[in-house]
Image (cartoon, rainbow, N blue to C red; front, side, top):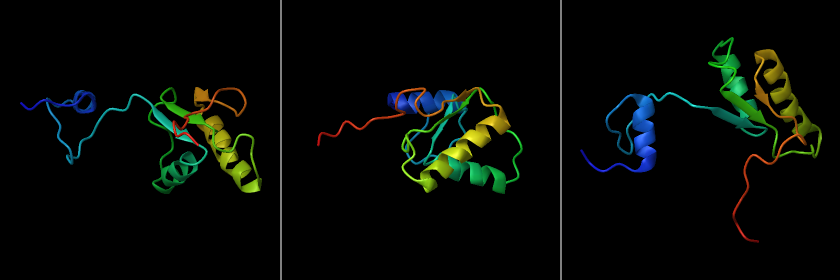
Length: 111
């Protein structure tokens, strides 16, 4: 067995495999699915397109409005509204309204 990176070890464990390799397609158990005001509206649209009715686990889907907090215009407010309504519809345990939490991620770039 070759030496795996920590990422490969985590993926292998979550896929129920002894080993994974770069480029290999796997089916891994998800600990948490995080979406923000950029990515989640796209995912929600695809969720609806496939006819899904419920998320896989309402305690493991996290939505964080982050990029447009506060909303800079009507379009960004509409993006956040999609998250808010989906979180309510799906009864997500972890939906964080803008201003109630810190940022989802931050860049380490110096400018």
